[in-house]
Image (cartoon, rainbow, N blue to C red; front, side, top):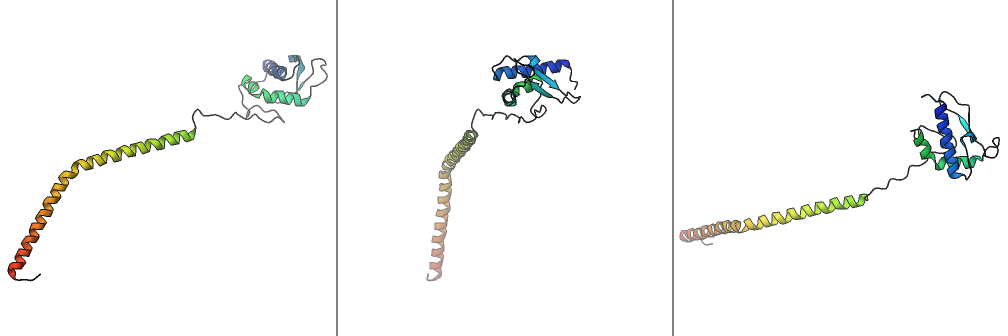
Length: 165
């Protein structure tokens, strides 16, 4: 990555924007001074007051402006908090993603759906079982009748044989 005069100008412009947005002054690009720029794009900078170019602004004001405009600074360079580091200024926390639907509502819907399907299955299987039950009963009655007749024949056979029961 080559850091050239155009990138320096962009950085100064973004920093001037951040300072203007959060400190009610008319900060110009000339009030942003870059020092000790290295090949690895490492440097420190000073923001001077508009009235006196030799007097630096309070560091807490600069840190606060950077912290509040961190997203815009990162976006200007297509970087993230992981790739653009400001020493002594903690990275911004990403806003908590608010889902459009609560997770408990999804679980509740799935459970109600399963209960509905189970209820319909039990209802349909009960109706089918009831429809086939009368024919099963008549078959069962024939079996009982045959068993009773067999028992009568058994008693008749025992009676004729002279066996006391």
